[in-house]
Length: 495
Image (cartoon, rainbow, N blue to C red):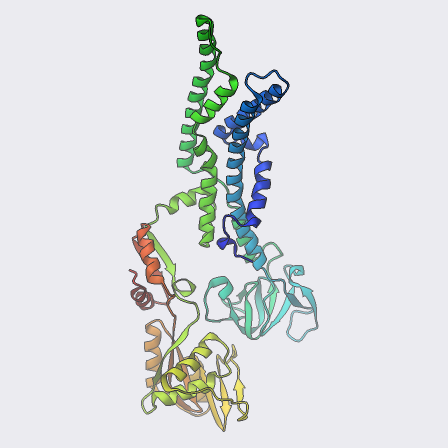
């Protein structure tokens, strides 16, 4: 299915509802809200009556002439309705796309609020506030909730765009979980905190659907101007009939102007096109912002967007790809870069995350280290755990681990080794420049650090140029620290 923000204007899924909506908007209670088009609407009804009269042989003009004028008038009204309905349809399609993104999952509802209790499978949509569920590695979190037991690494990229897993555990400030995110390791017991229709995704859908078609001050002023012009031209047209009757009576020759011709003249004089498209333009502006994943809740927001000259962007998932990639192997003194790369690749062969795969690829590119079939060698893989915050492999008596600096330090010191100051210094340097350090250890020996960097998306420099062409003078990038943002801005050609 084509995403809502990429659908063509001529998509049948948008055109057919718009045609139906154009007919529904013929209701007088809807038409009177637009004074200009309401005049055209009344004129269409009037000429339709004259056309029916002409078909009976008593028309003021030939039936074909009145019918042609009537057809054009109804076309004008329906076109205005269609344009507005089509613009509204694109916004509704965006809300429908958000609703379709809600995944229906089967939740493990616990009979008692503790790990190990009996559970029953229930649809995620059947959960209510206060229910307790068990979520294990690989499962989707079925609803917004709060962790009451356990600790796990959670992938929240679908909600926040942040590629790095976050740790969610009971107690403290990191206990909240969002429905639709995925548990990557371990397990958690969570108490549901939102009923169906009140979750984070539901609130996003309601925000899109609740975007009101409120007129901006400029639009109100333009509406008043159009109304004034309509009244002026209406008075001018109405006075033409008595003048015409008087002129014909005085001259004793000729035919007075017909009502059909006067209605056609009025529609030509009044600002019909502007009145027909004014509301559609406003709705289309809100729809265009939705295409860029920006929710405008009113026409005022769309109008204010035209005055923006400073843009603040979060780097992860916006400027960068969102998946960190291995960029360098930084060994401690006494260890070669190839030795570090070999150990890092061994520890990452079973790691299917983008970071793990990038480590394998970087080692292959830098030192031509080929992937090895460790299963045939009897290797034991150690998956990532939220408690240990590291992963690795056990092979031929070697215990190779990679993970966060503090986790590797605790692992090495618990085994009787020493965490070298050089490794701590390298990790601190990598962190200060906004990258993510992963420390690698072979048993009690620390080998060095893997630097993971966010990769700037292709074409970002060209996009910044386009933003400046649109009037955006300054683009500010937020990152883990100012050095990160500055480095990415320099690479992307921004300021």
